[in-house]
Image (tube, rainbow, N blue to C red; front, side, top):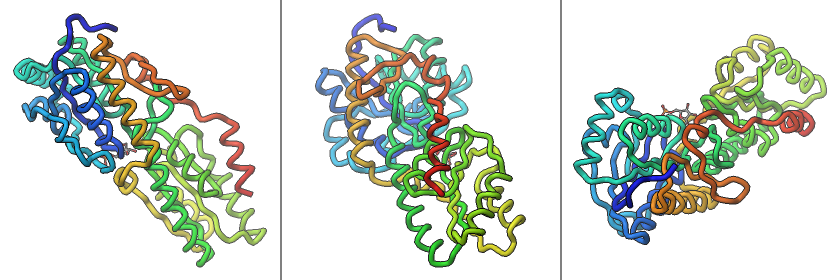
Length: 329
Ligand code: F6P
């Protein structure tokens, strides 16, 4: 899609769950706006802040020293009000009041879905940047924050493995991923987990229990099961309860990694991705593109219409799942 007239100013917001690298992307947006001669407005607390007029003009020095910081200097929120016609009207009034010509939206699928409706109703140009640790969007091979979150989970599971080995324990480690198993899959493979349970694959608990039984029989005393929180069995607690119920003599522990995966200094991969996509989003708006998400596919920046972005995620291939079984013998 193309915007009509030339854009003179851009508003930038971060919305939904934060992800490491959001700050690096905000920095890239602000600095790119300066390059393209555009005014840039920071909007605090996502769409909720927009509704409430929490808007301020930004200059390049406002984003100094934030590239390496987790969280988001713009703060974030999940706004129910923005999903209502009244909320959108208030947001539109603020966009008009501040003479914001276009929006750069940093967030996951909820953030972009919000933008689609807003754009359709008020014809405001918008470009999205995929920021979510879960990597549950199509339109970019990686989302900003995913690499950092997987590294955080990997380091944590490595540590858990040390203590598991010392005590000969079964550990169930729950990682984030409400609808997607990418963090579980990648951190589990990277740590040599014995089992990885993800929402994309129906979990057969009998098979999981059988694998523990087999390990026991051949005196393999450490067994790490990485579970995505969104696994249909009910996450880590349900899995550890089932293991305890079947093997009451085993020493079983549950560790839920939780929000530690959302924080921390972004990895180099997330910093580079954020810098590329922040620049690409502003460039796209300056060139007249709108209602698309900037992503990197096969190493190249690509723009995917919002309507296609929100449809789902890249499937986890059967050979990947087979490989886990082969390597965890
Ligand atoms: O950012 C996505 C995510 O990490 C999900 O995996 C998780 O279920 C959710 O956010 C939790 O978010 P919050 O605690 O902010 O509601």
